[in-house]
Image (cartoon, rainbow, N blue to C red; front, side, top):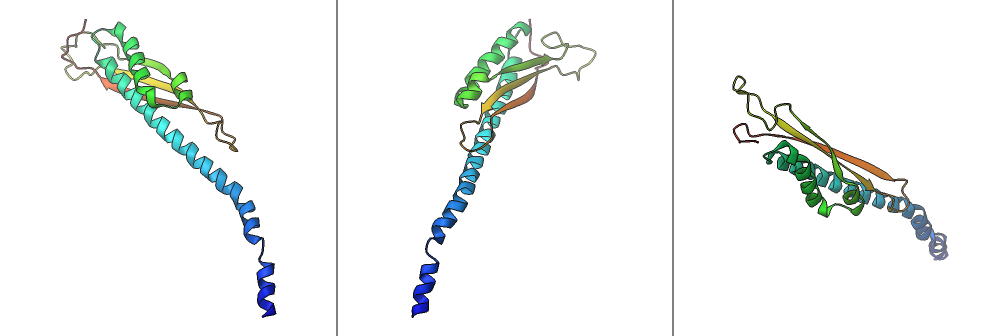
Amino acid sequence: MATCATDRRSGRGTASLELVIVAPFLFALMMLIIAFGRYAQTENLVDQAARDAARAATAQNAKDAVPKAAEQVLKESMVDAPSSCRDTSGVGSIDMTPGAFGLPDPDDPLAIDTVTVTVECTLDLSDLAGLPLKNVTISRTFTSPLDRYRGYR
């Protein structure tokens, strides 16, 4: 029976020691999961904002109205984004094919004019304790076709 008491005493404190060794790794793993989740969610929001901005751009009747419409839709689309991304988001570029918002070429019935919108934002991950993460720039591009038979000014 003396051996039983000795075995119990020799195992004392090992659980505490294991927790002290393992806890930092578990904490870092949890922070990484949160960081990747936040990145994936924000990336999805930026992608959706680029799609919405491109579609809104192609819904305009004049070429001059495209930048304002894209910015307005971007602002509305980024409401649910983290504040660091929402505050830094913007339309990176708006590219249009040369014939965009003009009369269609009757000699080329298969020509499709498009508007391409690029949306960018900076996601701040520095608030995740213990990780050497700083800022991540997220950029997404979407191209939307113009309706060939819609009347443009």
